[in-house]
Image 1 (cartoon, rainbow, N blue to C red):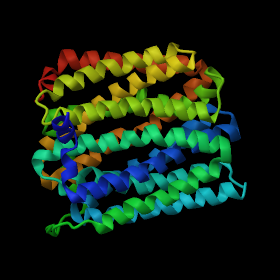
Image 2 (cartoon, one colour; image 1 turned 90 degrees about the horizontal axis):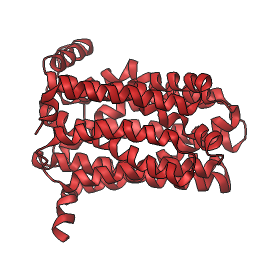
Image 3 (cartoon, rainbow, N blue to C red; image 1 turned 180 degrees about the horizontal axis):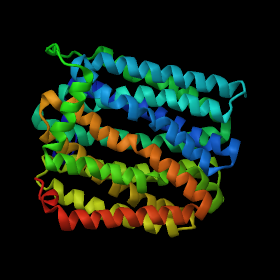
Length: 406
């Protein structure tokens, strides 16, 4: 048992990674508290699933304009300094949202504007965060560090939404937003306290646009990386946006409240956490493609089951499975890309990968919100799951090299 635990948490032997893990965990719990409370607040203000789509769109759309440039910046400057700047910006936005809510003057359009600001900060934060891990651990422990990153993220999705639901029901949304603002202090302090060796980034004589084009050429020339980046794009548009509907689902389908919404979010997070810890325990995986294939089929299949559930305990159980399948997909994709990409292209390639994920979520959010108004939440989720299942079958038949990834 001790040997298994040691293998699962190998990356924590590095002091810098321990600081990163602890700081990010606190910050992510706060972020999920805000995300959960924000979705329920705007549904309370508007009683419209379309507005849930608007917020999802507003937070993700800035990535179309800034994330690729963020990848170039991550390859040119200190990633630690870039992360301190982006995390500080997010902290300020959280405090603004808390203040407006405390004064009871918050309006749906203000939530959308603040979501745009958060999206801009995240467009620079995400590529730096994805490519920063290699600076914290040795290369042979990179896979474990990425899996633990996913574990940390999903630990937060278990704790954050549940605490948010309870806090929202007891004290209102203001405290959810204020606690999130405070939580950013943890990750900012962790970044400042890290002792990192100096990284000599050679000065670039090319423009940002040229560097972005070079990143796309690199991806285009690597069929496996190209396919891996396509998968989250499809899921983001057609099926991942089921999360956008959870606040409405908790009220209209399960006849619950803010606590129900928090439990649904946490159940998905619990499943994702179990998948991430499973991957971390497996160590240096030699069958990434097989695990990716399992996730590609199990995620949409379990989403179909969730769409038919009308009893909260069974809904929670189905969402645990949905979260497990989805995180298996994303962890295998992230790990495989990080192993395949060269260091000098890491920031740009990870920005393209992140754009395919976060950048298309707002499109999926808009489509999902509009469809839910037209055909209802259950039919919308069923339709997205069917598309993702067909895509998984396509990959199985036409891209055999994917499931052969070592």
